[in-house]
Image (cartoon, rainbow, N blue to C red; front, side, top):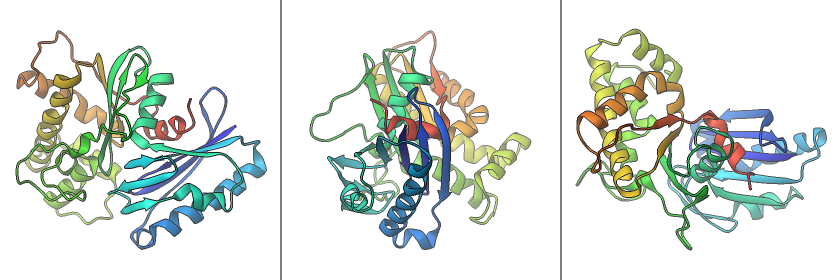
Length: 297
């Protein structure tokens, strides 16, 4: 058995993975504002406590961690959505956990899992995006991650799609994730509908489903679809993948967003090369893809 950990900007999920890359047990928690103030301690204490509990129940051979941001060896060089830099999380965890621990960018972990056992397993060339707090990405060519050398690359969320646009946590302006992440969609819906921050994503999804003709909701969703279309069409024009996979919390909204996204890209003629079919699929593994991919080989 292996332990996979998905460390997001707003949550931590820990799963026990069997030898067929399936989760047999999972625990998770939402990171609250007060915990984010001491993010490193919050992360480490939760991970250590739960790994110690899990190794009492299972014979665990290794631990994998999926993290948003730039990874170098055992260190998180920079994660703007976690708010950490030069953070050697593995070194700190090793003080309490006597197991091999590896770490990798979360979008790349999710892409590996989707290619192995998920929605992209039938394709040789694919682009994968995770839409959540931010936007992460990966490119798969012949079943393998695109090798970008010393730096992980594929930071799709930090493509600039709007000149002199909204400030991004990375220090630039106009980044893709400041317009087309799920966090932005949810925040814009709450603002337009005058809802407070306690309104959960599921409640917002229900509102979209039940009120398809509401002008306020339609305006926010249409703007989100437009920006997402621009970013995805740029990636298609560069990499010409057979398929695009989208993970993160987007998967829960796919029934109200996916067809509109594909239709918008085709109708606006954003693609340089004509296609008979535009294949965009939601991650089959949902938010579990990062957990599974963190320990997949």
